[in-house]
Image (cartoon, rainbow, N blue to C red; front, side, top):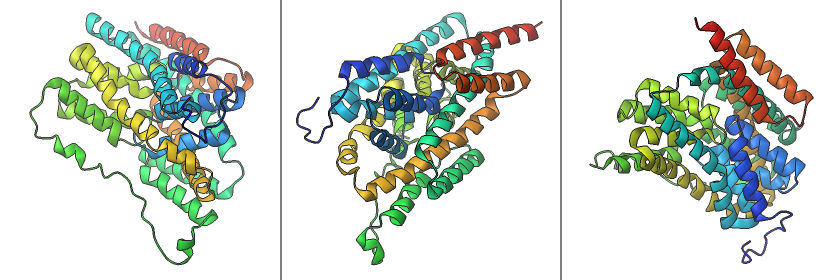
Length: 393
């Protein structure tokens, strides 16, 4: 722990314990960002009590405010809470590395054996089970963070509806929700006098255009493109998919449509952050160097967007105005997460068997609180393979 941080709370666990937890979550945590943030709340806040509910809410709000993958940013913040930059760095690496190694192995097999035809069958079952997992995670987050607060419920329902309609997360609505709750519950003095303070955000929107006309090597192009993906795409999990498609298929023609769909399937059938599909895509484009550059380009911005503002979140996070702001953003974030359950379900629940798998998953997780998600995922994968084999002549 950094002893130069005077306000650092005392940890009830060691840094090594946090690293091991993140390694386990990165190795066995299926379900994408919605499920992963739910696992962190269940394990770190409820069961082990390593992280306070207030610190978790701050981390979720900061992760939702910044561009980049939600689950990875929250994992980095969980490491930061008690062990600061060292904890954030090691927790982030531990969380991302297992799934990165898995997609490297799948990328090698994909190139070596010419595609992954079995993946469609596996995803058929796994995709449906994932819907059940993330639905239960969203339910728990809603109960814990929204409660019976009418204002937060209004924000929650609005963001859920917007997410369902637009099939994306509208970043400015998170900030607007935070500002609304702040002004209604803990208005600053200047507000009553008619003043207005502007909240300064990095003016990065024009940056991607700077690189458009440069003559660069392939690895440099990969690095710049995936850095843009990590730095300029708000939302979590599948929110980055349209951006990636536009770049790697339409603009650069690095992958075919089928290869890109397979890359998304890899992201969904492997544990850890969904965005780790960038490693698979990078491998198909330029082998191990391409995978490494793509992953670094995507995750370094989200690391910086978490670590740099974190001390200020910690220092000023207990002020009434900040607490109100965080409550508003948290309600918006969980509403968007709940809405995205419906969006993803539209793509994964395509017939009666997949609907049954999703419903059975919800029922099992509801009935058996200690049931491990990897067991559910493995069972769903087997069911998917069986159903597909019966349909194939």
